Length: 388
Ligand SMILES: Cc1cc2nc3c(=O)[nH]c(=O)nc-3n(C[C@H](O)[C@H](O)[C@H](O)COP(=O)(O)OP(=O)(O)OC[C@H]3O[C@@H](n4cnc5c(N)ncnc54)[C@H](O)[C@@H]3O)c2cc1C
Image (cartoon, rainbow, N blue to C red):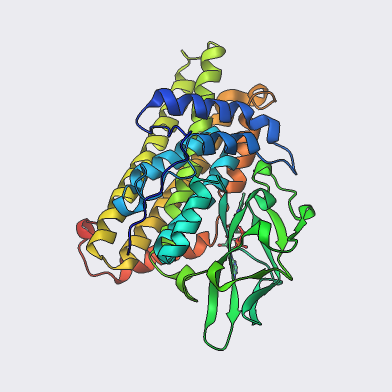
């Protein structure tokens, strides 16, 4: 595929991921702002302005630090974790932006890539992937040379703050048929009706994951991404779970960090039981870090080698399952450490717990576990060689 170099706007200074002195203050500011948008109907606009100004909306584009063509997945996962630890809702929406750009990297034509890369790097436009839907999901019909959408998407994180949503729907045209991706240029199409009543969640309020009705919206042929069925192609479809797992681990790490700070501030660090709980949290978080490092490295290596997709998906399935388990163990440990007093605002624990509890609910957790079991029961390799 043709390589495209995208220059940042002349005035922009790109943040270096290797310089904690640049990344940490940005993440601290995002974390400080988090309580301000912990309300239904709110969205962390300031955080996204900061991410855009730091060049992080364009970080995976050709020639940039996390250029997808260079296979730096572990580094990307680390960034996703850090952003999730600052604000899980920001991490969720940012992960959607990265996911959309990965699909553009995989399936767009060179002309489409140039257009969508410029949207992110020059115009700071936010992307997302909205695939989830209910009974009234999306149908795409070809009408007079353009493509008309009918139906709605649920859990549209970022809602109308997103200018380039990647949506999916069932395309029925004479020449092609199936689950089709399209990137909607929101300023150029008719109204996308927003149902805010859908979004009355336990946590993750600031992700603004509304229900949006695309009925009547028309897109052009050049807005369609890839061919029908591409969105579901493996290992990319299920393998992407390592990205949301990274954001989730960020949520657990934030709880761990806040617990340490709380106990230090209360002068309760000498207690043996507190120490053992913190020990357990520390090794749980660190095992999550090891899962991410290993999943990132192995994914890059296996994709480069053309390894069977089932192996890549199997490892991603294990990573997301293990990290869900880690998060579910870290939360009650923190609750016991900080007690009822710690769970009162303005302490951050109640928000962090609500956000992580909701964000851990990702698609098909049972089927994921079953698939791991099937893989290891049908694979003839020695246990030691299953993932080497
Ligand atoms: C904060 C947040 C933001 C999100 N943002 C987006 C977004 O931007 N874009 C997007 O596309 N999606 C988004 N989603 C949706 C997400 O990707 C998942 O689709 C969604 O969280 C899964 O919903 P659920 O847990 O109700 O699923 P369900 O599939 O209903 O799962 C609930 C439980 O039922 C089980 N189950 C599933 N199917 C069956 C069955 N047939 N019979 C019996 N049991 C079953 C599952 O294993 C699980 O235990 C978001 C979700 C959250 C929480």
